[in-house]
Each structure stands twice: as structure tokens, then as C-alpha cells.
Length: 204
Image (cartoon, rainbow, N blue to C red; front, side):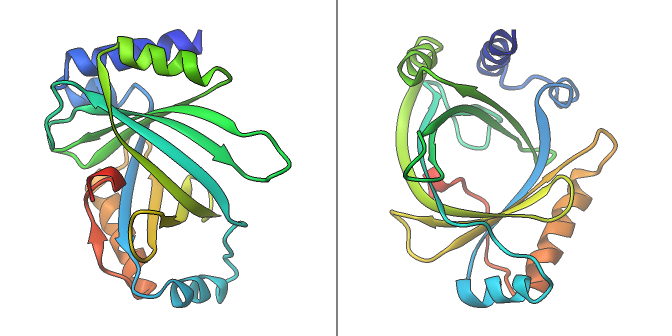
């Protein structure tokens, strides 16, 4: 049943990229997301460690990004991500289908994720929905959870120089996206970082 809901959500997002954001707030998870290119990964990690916040061991992710054939930047269009994740060499990979949609006028990101055991079948569904592949992103990632609903990812993208950090914070129905984004900026600035990046990894 959840799989049917997910496909319906994708179909609506492609058919109606300008659907009122009030409706989308009831679909999927609303998040405030902010990315930053780090000046110094070691210093960034040390500052968090000093307040007893430590990243997880490194794990590997590979994303295949798909966009609608009529995709336009900054137009609320969704993108689909087929993710392969390996957390240990002695354990099987896990596969996820992820929908991400950035609502430009509010700054909110709509995120929905579902696990899948059949990678090939899910890719076939993506293509049948009219999406096309645009890029593949491989990264080494570490994760740190800061209380309930907030996570920091520390990423080393294979095709990009340096390290990136990304904070994702879940939003409740009454949370202000603008205030949440400001809080994320202040968090980065407290940690000595301010080189914010607005583009998704596949757009950099």
C-alpha cells in the first residue's frame, strides 16, 4: 500500500509542478535542508566532538538521479533518486527510492523515501513515469544525529573537491521554514562555516 501511495505522489508531482504547497505539506516529510562546503573538515569535526557529538563510521552511497523530461531548474519539479547504500562489506547493500522536491517560494524540501528489494523493477517504473537519468553521484558519508529530527551528514563526493556538510531538520506543521533555515545557518556559523551551497550535488 505504501508503494502505491509513493507512485501516486510521484505522478501528481510530475503532472502538477505548481500544485499549491499547502497540499504538499500533507504529503511526505517536510524538511529544512542546508548544505555547506567546508573550509576544514577536521576542524569542523573537532568542534562537534568537543561538545560530545561524534559522527558515525564512514559508509558508502551511490545515487542515480532522475528528473522529468520537462524539468526546469527552480520550478518546483521533483527528482527521483535510486540509492544503493553499503554500511559494511560483510552485509548486503540496501536499495531506496527517494523523492525530493524543493518548493522555491517557501524553501521547504519535500522528502519521501521507500526501501525496495528489486532495484531493476523500480528503475523500470521510474522510466515509465517519464523520468530520465541525468547523473550518478558516489559518496562516502558519515552521519551525526543532533536530537530528535535533526541530522548532519558529512560527505565526500567522488567528483567534487573538498568536503561538504548538510543539515536536515524535520518541520512540524506549524514550523516556519524561514526561521528553520536561519537556525541552520546560525548552526553552521557557530561551527565556523558559512560557504553555503544552494544547488543539489548533481547540479554542482
